[in-house]
Length: 211
Image (cartoon, rainbow, N blue to C red; front, side, top):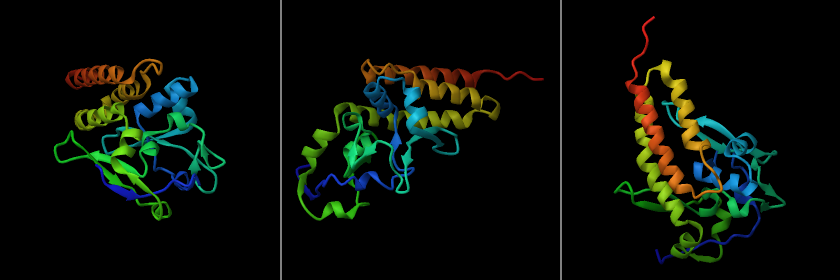
């Protein structure tokens, strides 16, 4: 990761515009924002995000809201990020994005080329950029997500329609709402996932009443 790429941030705010339905807020992002604003994650969602289904299972994700005719990030003011210390991982990692590698838990990094004006001057070292903007906490969270989301989606798809509402209530609670933003995130994340899997497995095994 010692290679260099041509990139320079001009602090123009351009990469924060025209981002409607483009920035996903994971539970770790919600926790950071809740800590930043000193409010519950549920309030962060109410104020700044919108829920959409990820796939046919109905698995919900949250997308950052935008504002104005240019669909700018709700946190952009005068071409500056107003939540710089707590901005979502997707924003911190830019101009890179991360995804699963061939071994599943291995992460691979890709260059985002949607805003070509940023790639005409300057040089950054890939390794240095990632070390500065992509923390160990981020890496552990992402590798955990690549393990747990397929299992959750499989369980959700196996449930009959009569149990979907209860399943979604449990999922929203354990995946997004049951976090104390003032405590370390990763231990809570692991515990919440264990409890969610147990709740969904119990729901799947529960016999339905015949009326």
